[in-house]
Image (tube, rainbow, N blue to C red; front, top):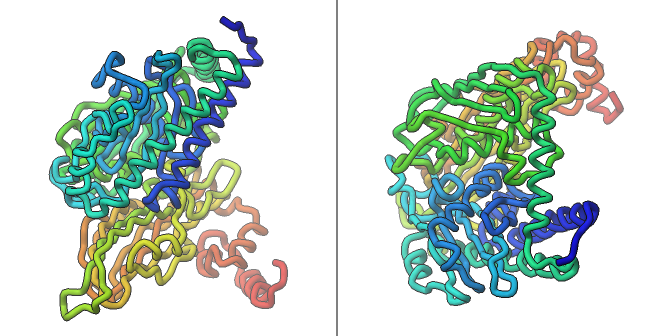
Length: 568
């Protein structure tokens, strides 16, 4: 056996990260769903033979990656190492043994070398449709939310299970798209495996034992060093958000002690009747992510660097939903977990964490069909179109928030052109939303306006997946709240922030996505920054006067110069 130096192991570690990044990029290039190709709603990782995650791709979302960190262990337990062979591919969309809801397909591929199991590659992608009621909050239990694929073999020694493919095709609205995504997931794992074998040949490795021990031991010690450098303490955090039909309270107790940080969600609201509940694996994913961002952002994500962060929650609280609770929109609540954790952490480590942001993605799915109020044109079609969009992130202790940027998910906003290409949908308006960023010494990021309709001859249902309609993001240290979510039909008909709603032919849905909150007293903001925001249209004259006390003469001067194209 070749003995390797610390430097060699560090090179291998960096190589593994590049391997899984190539794995993720291959998935983006080959996936059929726009949620993967355009928004990057995916994850990719490499694991040792015990199912411990060694490295993750930079591309991807914390909800997928950190949840997927636990998933491979379930595959090993269900299938058994003795039943794993070269050419196998495994699959599931189990919300509790995958990444939180049925719309995520997780594929795991065992890696063999000289007929011995040495590790695994795994990847996850959000698919547009998995059958059932469709992507939305309206289900009453998980059975209504689509086709369930237990942990099983998608391919056995290279032979794809054609019966499984037939069942999948017969239960979803976009069968070609879904089957294409499954094969893309499988292929990207294969690419990762090939690159791994090339690396092992180069460094003369028979297995991953040595590099695994190096990665996990160094990651654990580095994370513990950061935790133990903090002053021990206990603090609580709270956030109230819209929920489905009634507000939801998220309560957390954060404890910093030797060798660990604990988030306990005792006191959080119980299960909702509709599909916004969160499996614990997803709560854990975002609670860990929040803490790692705050105290150890540069330490790579793997099993060991996640281990010191412990998450507990009462069974059948909304952040620890168990089977058969409906969980399709677990992200709406799960994406609020980091800002709730930060409410507590801010009391222990002031001037570290941002103000609250939009939190959950501003997603909606449009189910289009030929109009039914009169005879539709012959070219009218049925189609499912899912879009990922973002409100603004919260202002930071020394910087403004980011506009139309998803925190904590990191999912990218889809281009209009890509959205309109996949179905008869029209995006009439998509632009930044002035005044939606909360005022402060540092301003919150702006949300967006987005107006959506259908092409001539179509009507549609829209599944809204929004929050912060009644509970906008709150500021820190005197910062003001961000703008609240708005949604209304073009004919003036009121609409709800969540749920499937009908939109007749020729009407549009007009949405305003929420802004991030401000940080610090608005009167302490640099006047030059206020003038810049006014000149760029980020704030209105009324907003500048009300929140920043900019004088009428200054406002007039800024607007005159901006109108002439002069520098303010």
